[in-house]
Image 1 (cartoon, rainbow, N blue to C red):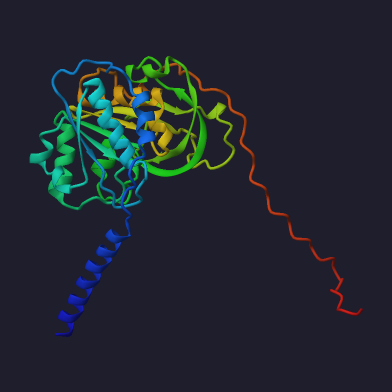
Image 2 (image 1 turned 135 degrees about the vertical axis):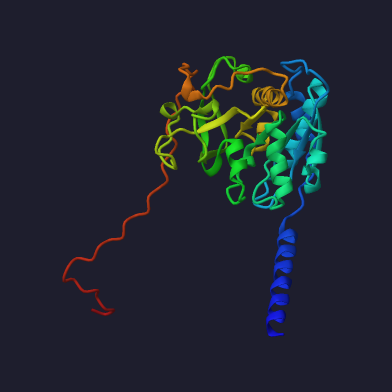
Length: 325
């Protein structure tokens, strides 16, 4: 009887903790109409490729970890982008039931709009997501889509190409690792400067598996602290083939202004069309090629954080004076 009581107590505690976690997540703020006007003005006029057939992409917004405030704006931007260019239609959802194989089958690509944490341990859903891409569909990742290290799902980590390791940088110099890729056409063969919450990645990230599109131009970035990779290889965007399917990831998207940056929006559009199967791009892993990058601008180092003043050392043998002495 005592054992049964303990078991019931544990179950109740787990339920209460889960309920508290859900209640703690604040609802998303409405998008400012002025922001949407900026997005509308920055959207590409047309898609780089003609869709082979009407395309549909599921934009998934569920989070079990940190929730980024830019999630609704990213979803709305992709919806507006698809409508304006005719490249695709989006359905936005945070319902895990949409990931069941029979429902996922209605889409040409799955977009993780910054889905963080351990989304589900339902093996049918997990296997179905991998099979969806391997069978010939697409996966698109926005910014925090790689923040899933806590999800016990190594096959997913392998598929998407890398896992979040930190965001130590803001203002960076960006080089085009693949200047001729149609997905990089928006940058017109030139590196650029950008400010955002810059993600870095750990295993299974590897240039042996991924075609890197953009990365930090380390020699020109002027960065003096925050490094978390021995090789200073900080990729920002990549593609890969996975089975018969395709993967596109871009690290930009934390800050709202990213979603009205015309060049970044064109890059996203081209990457999404690659994932959908409409834009052809060479996904041969970067380590197997020798491509001259388009270097980013040389940036001056940012200001060092002020160091705390060292405490004055007491002179040996000198005692502190007492009042009145």
